Image (cartoon, rainbow, N blue to C red; front, side, top):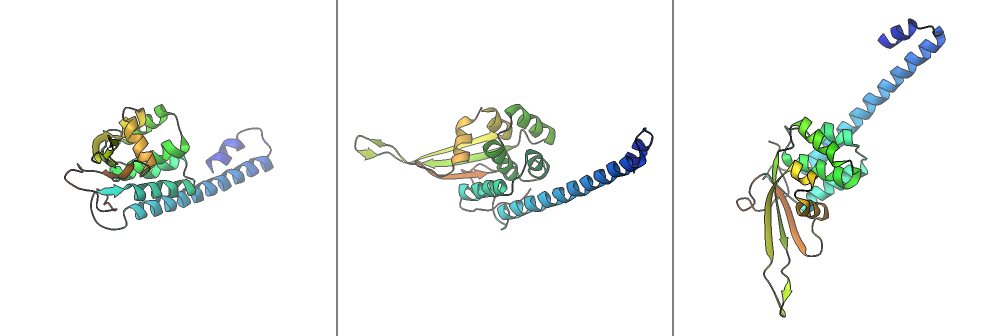
Length: 199
């Protein structure tokens, strides 16, 4: 009731002061309900991504499905910051939140970089590996090409790793046959599983 006390010191009539206090309490209730709803939705996405105990990697189909689910649930930038940019979550969940922001919310790069730094996850590293179809040359197809890169979350945002971001956003399309993200070097941990654990 601090708000009512604040307004009662002013020269406003008592009935207006009570209406203001009542409106603020309704707004607070609405805000708390919204927060709980978004927390529940975030929990659904996190459970989907981490549903089975297994390895430290995700195939493109899994993480892109999570990104599209976040879009259908209408997460805002602050929701992503609050529920997905936590340092105690797997960097893969941080990355899913980041891909969602870049692809669907389109905030300014500087804003995202600032938030990643404030949350303490900007330098988190993730391995991205993709397999591209071999090109045709002289009537025969060359070998398929495997590319593996270790990138920080901030590098994905700033454009330093533009190719990686394009691959992450597109997933398996046209010449890209397979995409996988991992918390470890994918040469040591091939993408054969679609689940991760939080560490």
